[in-house]
Length: 389
Image (cartoon, rainbow, N blue to C red; front, side):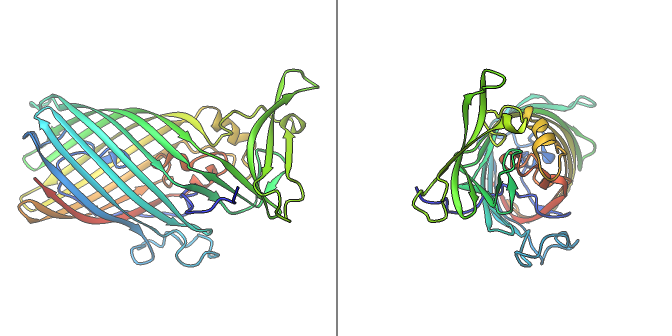
């Protein structure tokens, strides 16, 4: 079996300091994660009418007006922390009470080790339950599914393995992905002829899965798995960390197999997911205010998201070698301006700021080995066009 190769995904997307985002849009529909700050009850009710959007998303030294990368390691050059990619979104009303939308994107971030690549998708359906009448808001129920995936994720620095004295030179996880199911209740009010206010609250479930796990020790790459063996001291079964060299003929692989019982380190049993695959749930609340006239539209949105990852958070407190703090809350602020170039076409610029970089935006990037990277804020800029039909 060959050593793992390929693009490295954003296992450690949270590399940057503070950053802003900028995008513009004319769409009348609300986005699902990861841009829920703009959730609102859809305005388009004509059957088979809607909008499509495309745009570039990025952060680099040209648009880094606030010098957000000044505290990054320079070992990877001045481009460390650069973020770049594109997205496509579209939505359509099936009839006046039902709206659907989908999105797809492909992004990469420059780490000190490689370019990390991530693909995301989202699909949602929104049911309008009430119309806005005076103080009674327009009310909608929104159901969505969204997720992220990559070929592999990596950490290129020395890392103790699961609280033992085994220190890997690097670790690689194949095929990381996450899948979320989410439900939101949205209310929208017409404050004036040009201004609307929207509030929302939602709940979601998340499933993070990772394929094969590899660790490089002394130049030899091992496939690491969880094993079980009889616990001769306490009885029952004891979980172990097992490593099998992927190429036993490599001269660096003097030891082709190892197995370390966690009880010898007084460590608790290791779950099947090894704290890189896990189930979670999350909650969110937020709102958006929008102003528009015949040519311009301005939007400002806010979202607070809270995550519950079960046993993983406890494991971070005992097994994380750097920062034993669990990061489970993220705040997002997005601002947008769009200008109509044609009756059915507009250019947009949108900015998104996160207090904890990509926390909840790319769930698979958060695990036992990467949690300490989510302490810093981040953001990015997006520019593009949207067309109505």
